[in-house]
Each structure stands twice: as C-alpha cells, then as structure tokens.
Length: 324
Length: 250
Ligand SMILES: Nc1ncnc2c1ncn2[C@@H]1O[C@H](COP(=O)(O)OP(=O)(O)OP(=O)(O)O)[C@@H](O)[C@H]1O
Ligand SMILES: [Mg+2]
Image 1 (cartoon, each protein chain N blue to C red):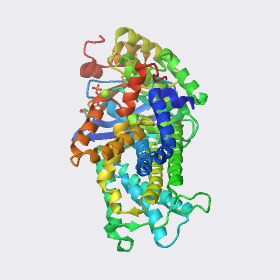
Image 2 (spheres, rainbow over the protein chains, first blue to last red):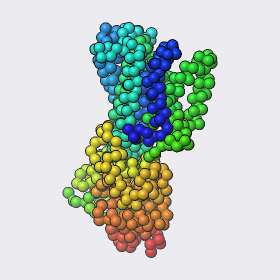
Image 3 (cartoon, protein in one colour):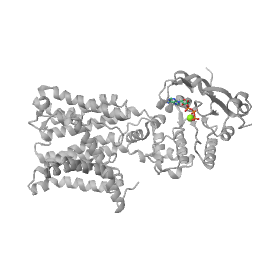
Image 4 (cartoon, rainbow over the protein chains, first blue to last red):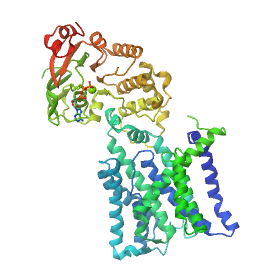
C-alpha cells in the first residue's frame, strides 16, 4: 500500500478522485441531475479499458491500435446470450473475459512477432476483422446493433438494473482493476514486461524468453478490456459494432497517453479529462471538436508524462513529491 | 568427443557477399581467458553474436559444455551458462542500476509467471544483484537510473549484468571501449579477479590489456582465424605481424 503513494501527488489526486466518484451519486440526487450518473458510469467503464490498455502500452511498450475490439466482444458476450433469454451475469462475464482472452491469444501470437508500425497496423487489422464480423451477422442486428432488454443477473446477489447499484459495481471494478494492475506491474512478471519494453534484445541475452511474457500480458490486458466491455454492454443497453471501430481504439490510446502512459493512475486521469471535456465542450458549442483537439494536444505537448506527469511535477513543488 | 569447453567448427556467416565469419574453428578451454584480436570489421562482434545466439550462422557448429547449441535460442544459451556483454552498451536505461541487475538474477531464478509479490522487495533477487554490483564497484550507484550514469559506469554495469546470471562462460565484447585510462585499469582489475573462476572469451583492442590478461589469443582477420596461441607465440608469429600487429608490439 505504501508503495502506492510513492508517486506523490498523483496518488493523492487519485484518492480524492475516487472519493469524489464514491460520493457522486449522492451529489447527483441532491442536484437533481441523474444524468451525472450516466456520465460518470461511462467515464469509469472507459477508464477500466484505458487501464487495461496501459498495461501493455504504457508498461510493455506494445501500442495496440485495436483495443476497442475487446469492448465490443465483451458487450456482445452480454448481448448475444440476452438475445436468447440467458441473463446469467456470471456466465456472460465469464464469456466476455474468456472470449477476449482467446482472441488476444490468437491475434497477439501473430502481432507480437512484429514491431513498431507493423504491430500497430496488425492489431488494427484484427480489430477491424472483429468489427466487420459483428457487422455481417444479421441475426444480431448487423450494423444496427442489438438492444439488451435485461441487464446481467447475479442470482439475487446484486441487481444492476438499478443504476446506483451498477454505478458502485463499476466503481468497485475500477478499484479492483487498479489494484490488480498495480500488483502485476511490480511483480516479477511486470518487471519482465517493463524490461522488455526497455531493451528486448538484452532481456533475451540475460535469459528471458520475452515473447511468451509479452503475449501473456497481451492476453491479460485483452481479458480486462473484455470485462469492461461487458460492463459497457450493461450500461448502454444498446450495443453496436461501432463501439469497436478503430476510432474508438485511437481514443483509448489517446486517453492513456493524455493521462500518462506507464503510470498507474494516468489512464484514469486521461479518461476523465477526455470524457468530461468532450461532454461539456459539446454542450457549449457544436464546433467543439477543434478546441477539444487543441486542448488535448497542448496537454500532451506541454506535460512530460501527461496529466500524471503534471501532478508529479506539481507535487514536487508543494512537498508531496515522488519518493523512490 | 574432445573436451574443449566451447568448440566452434567451420562457422560461417555471409553478409551480402562478404564473409563476416569465414570457416572459423575455435576452441576455448575451461577456465582460460581466451582473447580475440583483429582489426576493425574483422568479424569479432559477428562471431560473438553467433555464439550468444542472436545471429544465426549460415553454416558450421557450435558446441558448449558438451552440447550442440548451434540452433539454441539466445535466452536458453543464457540459461545454460553463457553470458555476453555488448560492445555498444545495451541496458534497460529507464530502470535503476539495481533493477537491471536484478532482472539478470530473476531470469535464472525459475519462471517469471509470478504476478503478485513485489519483485523489488524480494531479497532472493536483490541480494545477489547487489553482490554483482559491488564486485564491479557499482554498489553505491544501485538506486540511480541507468541513464544517469557515465559511459564507463555503463560498461561496468554491462559486466555486472552478465555476472549476475552466474555464467560459466563470459563473452566480453570490448569491455573497455571508449573508457578513460583510469576506468580501463579498473576494468582490467575486474577481469583479473574473474580469471580462473570463469571461462572468458575477450574481444579487446587494448593490446596491453590483452597481452597481460590472456592465456591464449586468436587473431581474426577478414573473418578468418589466422593464428591461435599464447601471447608469446602470437607476438612472434610472422603472419600476425604482417597482417595486423605491425610494429605495434615489436
Ligand atoms: N547486420 C549486419 N548486416 C550487414 N553487414 C554486417 C552486419 N553486421 C556486421 N556486418 C559486417 O560484417 C563485418 C564484420 O563486422 P563486425 O561488427 O563483426 O566487426 P568487428 O570485428 O566487431 O569490428 P569492430 O572492431 O569495429 O567492432 C563488417 O564488414 C560489417 O560491416
Ligand atoms: Mg565489434
């Protein structure tokens, strides 16, 4: 736990942020603005996806341009069983995780044989294959998508048809995901992933079969993102293949980089800034894309290590600096 | 089966029509320090890279500790006890000095599919790593980021990482390249301390270092071994003098 606070200000900011998230439903009811819950639900679900992407992108140096595909797979793992009247949440989430892991295993096994731009292109191509697969299946609505009339059921343990319950379920999922990724990146496994990002050739020379570790991290990342997809399917009630479009994958990358790739909380901060800016700017003006893009680019250019890096720098100035 | 620790037979590597390794035969005996000298571009690094498994040879065999390793991947050769250092420093620059060496220890401490325990607090990894660092005089720098160190210290870290894998054979590619006089002397000291304990194949341009440290020397010119012998024999070898040494050691 103490090691969590080693990063100084970003960790404190995150604690404040999580407390804010925990109190938000109360705030929303008090302000008579139930819409806030929907906004932050989406934010948190995308944050889980961004955290999963960060595991391979930030820590492992693998720029997957196809991560949104796992969101779609996860969403359809809820939608397709629901289409046949199967609402068992344990089953749906298990399918979401296992199907995503399986796809990550197969596509990763091929993509990880390549590097740099080729890796980016191949992950993108695989994601487009997933996208067009769902588009082509008429039975599940093709590109019109699929309505999920009933959310996942957890045998009376938890009723996520209630938006408040879903909200706290997602918040708990986000915290658990952060905890999981924190453990993984500091473990032996995580050290191999980071080392391989730093210098793969040297890692092999000192005795690591790096390929299999990188592949394993790719599978873990895909599985977590599939889980986020199952949450997203439940949240939106209406799923389309478009959720896995390459533009969405690009947005996930942007959230990670914006927040600070390779830092634990960065992706959450990046997702928050992305989602909130998009939301409020688009309300002010219909020409919001330009200021939106400009603001994001400024953050990326003028902060080293994204928002997380900015907090670290600030923390150093006010005596909440990083310790090593 | 003759008993050289490392046996290279008829090794061949072609780069775009140029034989970088030209039918090389080489025997490195157990616990000797065997130096390879040769002019720039003679194929010394290419030879080491084939021995370490990074570059596949076009022909020939390599045997190490009685086992044919010609097509064994690099990581497995490391696990068999073969370690190399790089002529051009090759480190994980964004990690700390200690993390670099800890990883080398970790690679040889069973599989790394361990997802939970914090690796930095595992004394099983940190202690051997610190020991390797102290043995090359980098104990004080353990917690610095590798990028922040001097060139000479990077060279020392290269050696520490190789040592941390507990190798039986060390392949050292110009460990003193780009070092100042004082740093070179320290490196010679480090190698002298390892002598007898580890088998070493040393590539080095610093002739003083080579002739004081080596038990035997092989001379590589245009990818070919033109002579092998004791420092004394090499010094007096006519072909070597003509092809390479010139008046330098006369
Ligand atoms: N990857 C490569 N592709 C093409 N040619 C190469 C490659 N690596 C080495 N060569 C060529 O092979 C020959 C031997 O190179 P090598 O680096 O092994 O020499 P060296 O003896 O280590 O030289 P130096 O003393 O400068 O380090 C050179 O002619 C070089 O240009
Ligand atoms: Mg060389």
